[in-house]
Image 1 (cartoon, rainbow, N blue to C red):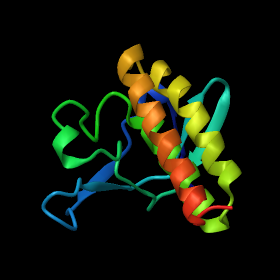
Image 2: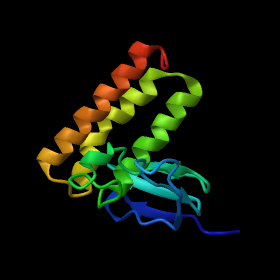
Image 3: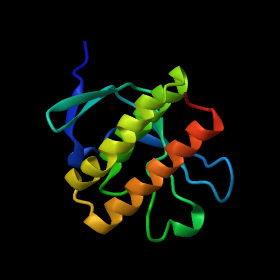
Length: 137
């Protein structure tokens, strides 16, 4: 039996491997190579081995200012996990929960308030766009 590693959200540095980008302008994704748990505000989020995250989903031209992987990796991984569950089930409420918690998670990771606000507003806008398009109900 293997021990499942537990990380505080700000200290999330999982065993992972970068995957090649699908397009030259696309950001690379990472596959998590171990079962692990991220803890934030007393809640535990189980991330399964094999889960794929791209960190912060940022357009290529903004990546110098907003790198995909940074000290906020724990926050982006939890957000990606909730978004994957929302897409599997088609439930907008899972996405909305992730979007609303994202700002607080970014702040726990030490992201400055301005950057956290911009990143949070971007994911909320995109989640609403998915709902309007009918991807999530």
